[in-house]
Length: 387
Image 1: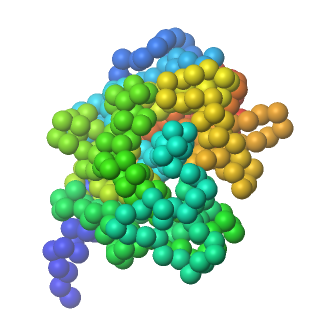
Image 2: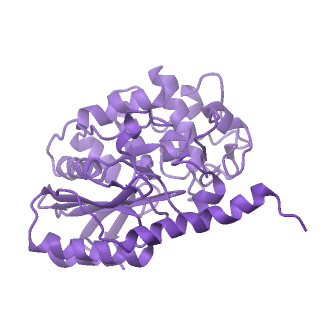
């Protein structure tokens, strides 16, 4: 029986990728110069980071820690590109995947605060050239429902597309069936149940573009990233040549099977298109914490932060962010998973603590690292993220 060349390549790619990671992690794992204070506490955490990377096969990882309402430590470990021996540093960008969603929600809340959109109006009011069709005619889909996964939309998420070919447009994603990449439909009565949907955020993306008259990445830069000083963050898909100079290449067998190259491309920018660093995300987390306590934190006003963190429909869901409500503790968190990447953040609403971890391996294996952070800086009550 003959085995075609394409089938042989598909079979060997995951093995080759895995061997590269294993060989690299047998060597000393480099660490970048830290941001903030480096002391015995961070050295102990760094040891756990390296041990976890070796055990779990994570080629590159970057972390930021928040304490007393400030980003007190950030550092990069391992490699953003194994073959070229390029190390991770605190400016290395990773795909944030679904952590794109809370940033999109904050931008929509800014648009709502300025009167550009109404969270509870029919979203079709803001869409041009394409409307979201639904058989539930007396129950229109709203931006609030889309942001809170209550719009009854599918699909759940996306695999992305190879960087070697032109990616479909947003309109293509909304209307055309690809493998786990569309189309976007309303399958359940809006508001009736929680159903996580990246597809719903594609509708939000279309609304942002149609209301602002700009591509989503430009609108997000003006609404949130630039005012927040998040200089190492963007929503370009794919990233430009300049932006990709210090971007982490994705690793993992699933990515190798789905598409080659450095990373996948996600035209579903509002749902999964953010490139960023833990330090940038930590700054945004601190801004939300401070604004919620009554301070004006740049583009995040107290009213916006309070709406972002207020339970919507369910106790565990804010506006685009998940909530952890246990007794007197209130926290917020989100995770992101694209092929080749995993990221997660968690923070207390009022205790001034938090953390962000990003990696270029599709593995949710941060438990030992988080335990070390909690031991050194105090716990951040987040049961879905703690080991």
